[in-house]
Image (cartoon, rainbow, N blue to C red; front, side):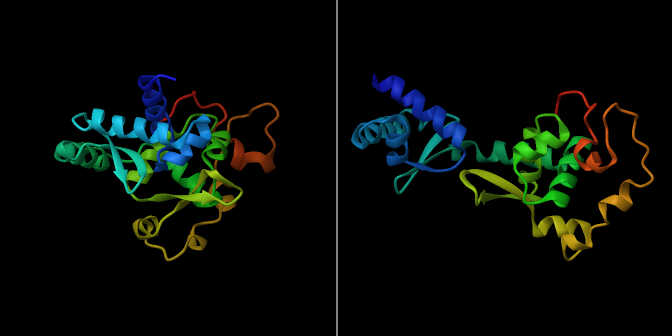
Length: 197
């Protein structure tokens, strides 16, 4: 495998992972010698050092990050996003997490019937939810609410949230063939268009 191709693969894996990876992680995934991977990582760090997205090397743990040179612009952008009100879709995802936590992205999307990546990213940036390791699969994450979430609602525990059944008792849902009462929490948005945000 050529160095350029290997660097491209490593960059794609770093982007997909979203968490720090070591040379041995890449070596295992790609079935390559660790020294070969280390050389490719070093080359990638050097190649990206002037780019907008750089490769951080923290004691042998590698991760993609925005360049410190553009921290002011990135911070301004994030602050502008955070000042915007939560969209209906984001509030919906927040409610699902609050009532079903800890919950995976796949489960959230199964309930909503749409991709929820944007809403999850927005809630993570605001500190209202956090990722935790999935005890049944270390390669994936679960989402749960944070102390910040409780502070925003003015409650001490998620146990103080109103009971879901009491919240929806007065909501008249559209008649949908095959929709059963006991599946309502999972099917509230099955007719929603296939987009998030």
